[in-house]
Image (cartoon, rainbow, N blue to C red; front, side):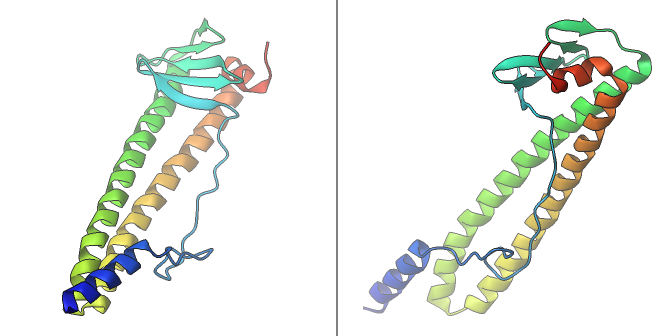
Length: 176
């Protein structure tokens, strides 16, 4: 009988909406989101190239060898510009890698929370459970802050490339 009651309580807890209010992570801790203005384009990797698209058209690509193409035309780069393009692309590589890692860590925490809450209900250790989850959530928040820092760096690098490489800036100004 007691197990049936605990199972019903666990089911109710697991199916209840999360207590997330604006400005909290559901456990009462404050969070902030990053506010980054990216280029006015859809950005993705295609065949190992970093591709920027606007209105369905490819406006710029940075190939794995860090060559730059704007509207399909190869852009000749000085060594300094080549370094800047390489750093920019490397930033996107790092951002994608970090985002994947953060997503996996969040999914792992969610999975672990389900099993831990059931254990906490059976043992009566909800306070311990909450403390453990809050500690793990704090780690994710630190990871998310690092991800935001990467995004802010990319925002700065993008603005610098637009300013120093007129051809690259043309891809984000208007269609030719």
